[in-house]
Length: 355
Length: 250
Image (cartoon, rainbow over all chains, first blue to last red; front, side, top):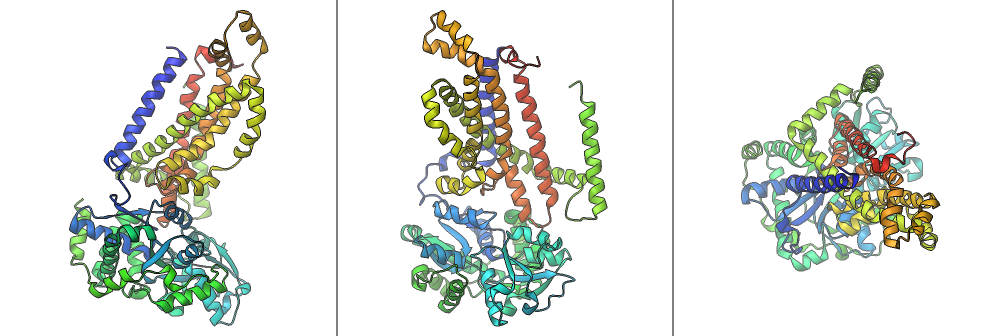
């Protein structure tokens, strides 16, 4: 055979075969490709952290109880990609850092916070044998936070304020949370703080010690919220209501006994987060109020405190008000009728194994 | 395949050193080769290994394929028409050094987190080397070929199809080989975008999975091995008579 025939033949065979295989194994089916956004399932962006746990829990329970469901959770590996996907309109609902949502609003993005994702669920970790015993000991040390728009960064600002120190007293750096356990283990940083389960991992693997849990230094701490594009609120308010109801109900379900939490650790780790279930089991139980999922209604004073700290730490300008970036009606309706899903932990484990 | 012993010995030495260094450092974070092998087996048993390989190959195939469709004709054109090269070359040189990682935000904003975004990134990474090597191939061609062809009264189309393209083929093929390497190289960066499959995704996802660096390295190993396979496949093309004349070492 000549070069030309070989090339043409192998190219077409290969392109055809690999495309067919990929379509078969990994892609959405053809019939959904040209559906309008409102006819598609609502894509919801999330990261594999406990702050976003209600997203997979809602999806899993919905799927088991009602079949395929209205939502399609989409897992990201970092904040920038999650945010950009929202900006592109690919994910019209997303779990996102509260200050990041407010900052986007200040920059003119039509984003509305509709509900909280969690309360607490962050720890400040130091090395196990470290001398650091209090915030004051952090003077001159390297502290890693996930992102400049993270509430963990604001948490550091708040803790320093309370200790009579300023941000210049420590060395603050940004680091993706998955890298934090390794950084702490290799002693490249003195302290790390991010959402769980990455902090629990430092503890579980034996090189990290909890300096503070958020509930000790900022009770009812909020890091992530559920935010939606204004177009989605306009076009499909009933779908958003159903989503918020689901988040509220799965929040209640997660607070309805340790069995539910342990079941969630199993199905979320295996089906969504792709982590060792031991991690979620640990952070959801030691102690049980390490992260909380009731009390998810939007409260003005929480956000005003976040906005004020955001301004102090130069990430927010303070040009938007609570009413601009928040839409409370879905949360208010959900609060009135929320109750834990009627779904047994045992059934969840059965459903997980049976598929 | 005659000389398979030497590479195998080097590989064995490499694995032994790797194992010894991990043991010697006492690290429980970085995996030994055996742990990585177990990681690969685990992925295969879960059924995701083949899926991920197919996904990555799919994206690289299309990105690279589109880059050839654009890059080779464009390069030939620029090589042949001086004014075109003068006009476009500076722009190409501006775009060429921009890393695909820098294009990630743009790709997500334009294409969302679909398969199109990584294909676009791989296209960008490989189209410039292909264009530049095709252009250089025309510019370095022996002028005597063209003069002889002109003497035989070939039309412009004939000249391109019968003389210029065949004359440039060996160098174009070398360019393609390098570009394919680059295309495969950027698969990790391209799959940082939250697609839910692919070897790059495997690496990023394993970082989120706690202490699963065995899976990170497993992803690296698979990328390396497939890269070797791709190179071997492209090298076979160099054995054909149409291009063999162009290489010094026949």
